[in-house]
Image 1 (cartoon, rainbow, N blue to C red):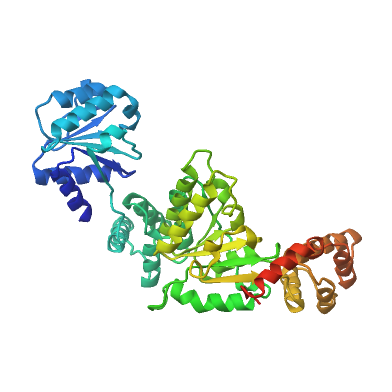
Image 2: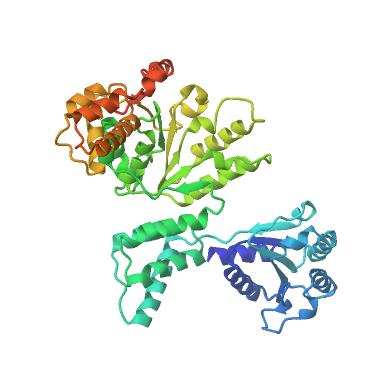
Length: 490
């Protein structure tokens, strides 16, 4: 196993302190003990509850050295070169006496076989111990290991229930893909949950696994998991965008083997309320992948450097969730070309651009924006993303389709509505304004106890002042910029 071999090399090396950050304490301890057997080294575990205990001989713990300083002094005074594992020692690294004792032990072990291993879910060594330390990370399970975990859990269930676990090869492969990026412990837990319910691994288990995986990974809440995605039927118009997505679906979802580059992402630029957010949801719905939404407002932190760290963690989470769609809504609000935030926007931009250039995972970016002049040119140039689509105000045919979509969604009888007439009457309306006209007409018809009809719809349209009139100059400027630089979605 690569984990065992890498740890053995560190233990056999000359660095006296090894740090291990993991939530899988038992697995890490097992690896250390097995590595110590091969190196014939006595191995001890210290905890604040039990003190010092020898593991390779299964001796009782020495509880009289459970105090951190007593434990370190005992190790220092002992002439025994061995492996000393300090569990959850992070809180005691703020004490200068403990730091000094650790340093003296490390210098005593330096060049010898003795090792201090600090094992915790979170560790931050003081600066004067960095030069004496090396970090070890447990590898995440490979595809082969994940399949073995599934088969092991299936065998356990079969033994207890005297039934075979039902599944098929395609579903099994998708489950393995969905479990990638999780630890052994978390993957095993999700596999067990999927099997125990009905003794089968089916298509219906996959969304639940992805939702549970997201909750495990996104502990800092910088991303939101959008459970409701859209379908093609919910998009009025956007024929060119739909065609573009269908052409790339099999390549992105790996349903066909190809040497073609994996799609990177798109920028949806356009008038407010014209369906950019719905289109972003539709990409995930059409491709059948999870949809993650990145909210720049949640990234920002008052401490210098923390905002960029939050972004990196969010992007790492997206990579582990791949294949997925990463929706960056209103991009210009998080990354602008201004200079009024002590350089945070520029650092965020640099972090995002570096990730976009280096990422190998199947994370498809759907960025939406309303103001092109607020976006830095290095982000929107070709090569960063695959295409820039412009979402304009809908034409007559598209407006008619949007009306039908919203009436159908609400199960409204449209026998007394002339769609051609109301579509002509609402020229300049955005998709969201058309929806609100439908909602208002429903209220009006309910209040008058009349069946919704063309006259009611026309009155509601007449009473609405669309954004294309209120902000006509800004919208025209956006259209002028997009006319030669972007691809229309229709």
